[in-house]
Image (cartoon, rainbow over all chains, first blue to last red; front, side, top):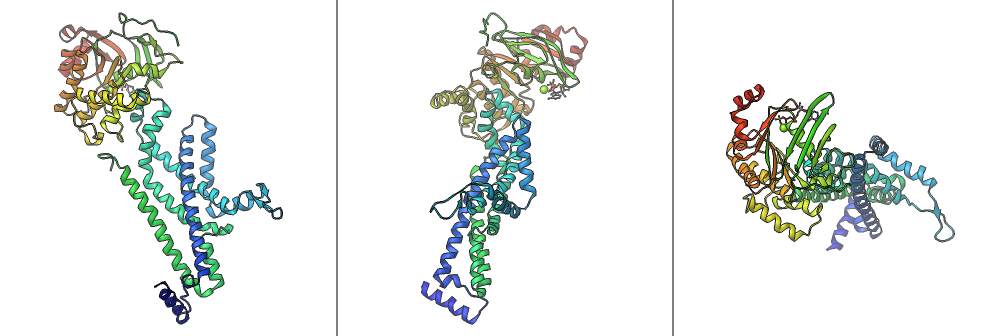
Length: 251
Length: 251
Ligand SMILES: Nc1ncnc2c1ncn2[C@@H]1O[C@H](COP(=O)(O)OP(=O)(O)OP(=O)(O)O)[C@@H](O)[C@H]1O
Ligand SMILES: [Mg+2]
């Protein structure tokens, strides 16, 4: 079965040189694609989780009574929201990367403690996190003052009111915007190519640099993978949204 | 915290010359009132006269500018006020119910006793089910607020306050958002409470209720108490022209 599919595409590449699906019949290229796919998935999952954590923490800090705390969060948001993520990646890896310590595992080569993958995760998480802070903050602001007062008049303190009343409500309000931002984040992971993170785009570009006839086939795969990856994310988020829906509440 | 030497012979709530401004607007201009244990007191008066502001001062939702409010001997106008201690003694019910929309009726009632009083869950649940019965909502334990009528929500709100076993209950126009048929079911609940000896302070426009259940009525206008007395004399022998005019409009 697999054999005949591979044969078909090998045949296709010979008759139609612009459609060389080399990664289907050449095991070396298949391995590169799978490595890239795996890296893309890791990058997406880790950044999604970290950016949500950053969003929640940032939104809480924005409610701080201390002005300087709010200013720091505000500065962070402005920086990451108003500059291109591509430049952020370059800046983190090439500029900040110079100042991080390195170590030598084999006694020969000096390796920085934060790899390019590490920098990509940090940079992309903070990028998406900046949007998440804003998203969660507007969710928190959507919780009516009167609901918080009811909680406080029952003797709950600020923190308890936050944990048991404000955040569960704010989270539900935030989910649709969060959904959008996380979709964006997953797509933005492709930009990690500029610091040579071996994710899917990097691998596919390498493949068609080696085999120029594979260019179209590589791009087709790229689209397909992202349609499926983002599709899974959106499906999951929608299911979550439905699961969190409160009977008789809101739209 | 100073040990309070309050005894039930003294007023449970004692307000003396309470002043409160919002910016330039002086809303309370020296309000005094004594409420004994077991009293049911109604506060009436035209819109904007400061009734809500006053009742919210009693559980420190609004801080007061000068004067004194003591609840069982605990001074509310104290920068080191232990709000938690105060709010354990004082229950409050709002015009707009302000239930937690993401919690069922039963969970709404259980939240504060579990989180604030740290009582064991099964004990709290038993009590919550009794309270549901008391406010005549058997069968609605697992309904969310959005699935309940206004009158039902308001009775859940009353049960939620009672679950903290307060010594005094504050009601701020709790029937104002209800349609005439459901007003009665809520008023019956409050009357039952008053008859059981719960100390109640109500802001209300329900003159029938005030006449029947209250043992003292206060008429406020523009931040002062114009006139007060037991219902018998208050409704028939009002002296102040402002009281007379208000009563003639409303009765
Ligand atoms: N948080 C606030 N900030 C500024 N002004 C306020 C605030 N709360 C109340 N006020 C003002 O104080 C005055 C008294 O308001 P309050 O709500 O106590 O009146 P009320 O007697 O309860 O009226 P109603 O019968 O309409 O409920 C009003 O003029 C109102 O605009
Ligand atoms: Mg009012």
